[in-house]
Amino acid sequence: IVSVSSKTYLFGRGLKGRFDTSKILEAFGGGGHSFASAVKLENVSAERLKTLLVQILKGEDPAIRVKDVMNYPPFALREDMTVEEALISLAERNFAGAPVLDQEGRLVGVVYKKVLLKVAKLFPSKQVKDFMRTQFHTLSPEDFVWDAEAILSTYGEKLIPVVEDQKLVGVITRLDLMQTLIKQTEPLKPSHRKVQLPKEVEELSRVVEKICQELGFKGYLVGGVVRDILMGRRIWDLDFVVEGDGLKVAERFAQHYGVNVHPFPEFGTAHLKVGDFKIEFATTRRETYPYPGAYPVVEPASLKEDLFRRDFTINAMAISVMEEDFGTLIDYFGGLRDLKDKLIRILHPLSFVEDPVRILRALRFAGRFDFKPSKNTEKAMLNALSMHLLKHASRGRLLKELTLAFREEKLLDILKLYRQYKVLEELIDGFQWSQDLELKLEKLKEVLSWHKIEFPDKKLEYGWLYLVILLEKVRGEEFLRDMSAPAWVRELYHTYKEQAKEVIRKLHQAKKPSEAYLTLKGFNEPFYLLLAIEESLRPKIVLHMEKLSKLKVDVSKFAGLKGKELGRAIENEKLRLMDETFTLT
Image 1 (cartoon, rainbow, N blue to C red):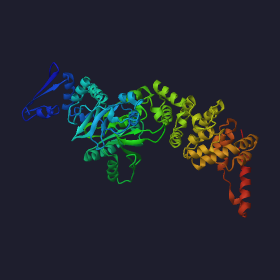
Image 2: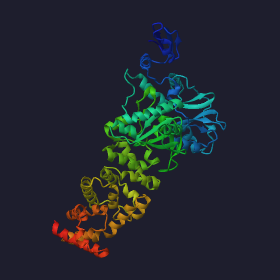
Image 3: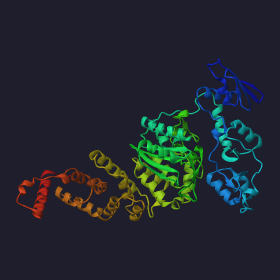
């Protein structure tokens, strides 16, 4: 490699018949014989060229061509859109500019948000074509990234449309090139971290890779599964995204394993199950929110945009499942760093404004992992809460997220965060935290820890019991109905609210085991656990659950009795045995 002024020359020599230098230099647009080749590049440093050359010699596939780094499918504005409409479209996607198409879909210009903002007050109804640039540069997918760098640095443009056969196929921006340049100018070392996938996950991912290769697509593991693999947690759910058509990949994947697939074409997603794994396939997409907390409007996009739309950096990483870079971690936004620093960080300042439901998600992950919101994330969260955006968000989505929180093992930690940020006050009419309520929740945790140990076979969704306590002093029936709480939970709430005080009074008065038994008889186990919050009653409740309710009597002595007489005799004998065998403490 020889560098002269702005030019860099790469010469290759190889043993004839043993090593083909021309194939290596073809990657840079060079040529020659198999044993002697050369290429001349403009504005590419010798150190950068060296880094790229070594990656190619190692069999890696560095981003050299525009097609390797461009965003596709591209987002574009129509020339007949008003300035106001165009600004809304750009703001929803957090874009600084976009190509402009005419009614036939032909590329006719480029427009920037900064220009539209300047004219928006005076001419909001004017059309985009009145303010777009009609003289601009374009590139083809096969051009080199340094050609794009030269255009952006020389002419001050912020984006370049990528055109093939006179059709807009992509967009390349300064950010794309800056990230690529950083990777290509680092000292010689692996530019991406390789991740070892769990065995079963790797097997499934290899099938996805094969299908994507056949269809000409690219596939990636994304989101929570990547986070959990990096944290060494057990994997149950797999999310794959496909640059191409996720539904097609899902169909073939389902055929391979002989399972049913459930497609959702409007969202470009499909769900299926293989063994213990719940698997989702999606086409890479961008999302926009018509109003805070609304269900998103979806459109196809690149992997980078797909990751950028996600909630937090720790959930915005991907792992390639393609053969050329299988297991390579793709981390545009510092998610790995935030995992190490135990931080929850949003990807852009308006994240909570666009989707206030993310406030609940942030606190759920913070509680689950013992993480903290970053300073800017906390500031944005407090700002969104002060605007009461949770009250305007989709009730269904909020309650669905709340239901997920009540299924978490570390629910109490999440509830403490809810109290710190006054979240439940926004969601439950009339709700207020108190010292007594917090003490009750702590005592319930003690009771449930005991129950898990003593009754490991009893499968109870403990989170609902916490919710019953939280709703004790408000009108919670409607809230439970909105949450689609199970029938047993709604019944428990009603029983606890209407009868708990009287049952507690009778239990305090009970002097004999039989009296405690008769007081508690007919209620269910979740009700007993709520009563056991009162420590002075726990011995009686524990005795009932472990001994009294399971007491059996010898019915042979009542051989001559039938029907109600037999039932009364058995019950009286049971009461007698209780008082004879056990004592209340």
